[in-house]
Length: 277
Image (tube, rainbow, N blue to C red; front, side, top):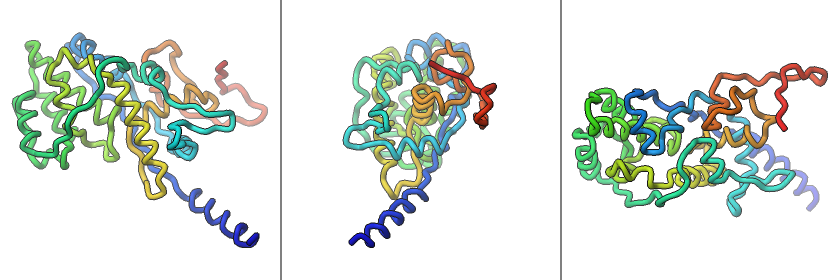
């Protein structure tokens, strides 16, 4: 019995040690025309649109996944439990966390997709521009860049395309990082009502689901709002963080938007350290 235990434990540890998930979907938001800044603020997506390039940290994300518990939706550390909260979403991404739930029917019909796009943009993607129920981000980018911003209607169309790009790159990114589900489009029909939804809550729920899926042994890649996860870890585990830029910037994710590199410190060297209380 003792021999079996001694042989079994190292094999199990080796299997987990060799499991390294790919976490390469940290994309910056697309640039947008300053002409639509007022309309973008009206929707509540202005601040998340300011997030720049944040370097991915696959090893840190994998370490967090190993400490994630599905039963409690919290990270288990030696000092206790902690989790990403709605307050973290609000200050890191600048998204609204109060309002209506982000919910609705999920239809897979290509005809329904065409009708929705025609209604909102006056043009529909071809089947080559889609992957199942996902519309390629290149299609939204192409539509947005062809819009002439000469009235409120076209400005709103432009902002809707930009929001869908934010969904596909930062908030609800899939593993490909190249498409976005069209189920969000019906929620953008009423431009004035976009800000009434709790987009921050939906983003947090998507992160929780992504973390739970990433704990599966057969999972090889993690999707979801990795910018939120990485920024949260750097804020609450500052000894792992790169040297931040402007500490007073908002949203907080932009503290780390520059290409900082962590410096290996010798026991006798503290000149490159940035101490946080």
